[in-house]
Length: 78
Image (cartoon, rainbow, N blue to C red; front, side, top):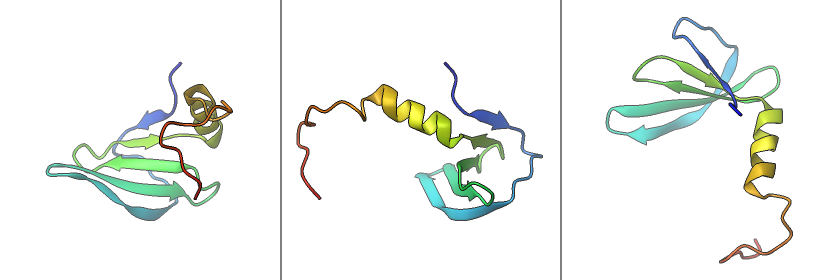
């Protein structure tokens, strides 16, 4: 199942900047939506945007095993 959506470089979002990540020519601007604080990523190479709803993010966490009660290898209490 596909999660998230790609938007063209002419898309506009009311957003708040969180930071940047990447290296060399591959840099991404990390932001959150001003309305629901959902994650938004922009490729500085293409200008394209990727949005992901909180529902999709929770679904990804569940698929990855967030609800599995067994301890993680190397897991430590914070």
